[in-house]
Image 1 (cartoon, rainbow, N blue to C red):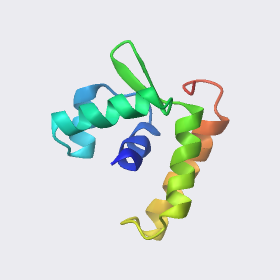
Image 2: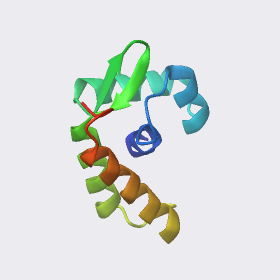
Image 3: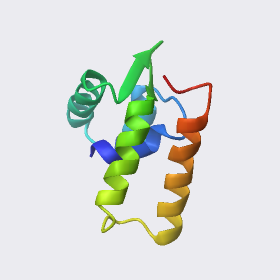
Length: 95
């Protein structure tokens, strides 16, 4: 579940409702995931939006590399890795 949230946030900051729609999780479950990711420093919460931190992007890349068996096609996997790499290298938008 955490990887799904991190992958969603690699596209840019999102509010709770946007994350809920993208990740298709119950509000209760998503609240738990978001609390854990914010506490761990993977996600930053400011101005009612969640955004991926550099630590979160690195963690997502690690999780993708370790869990290659996940339900990503080769194309989706490469696109997600590229998006996370871009987030790591961007000056703006990543804490």
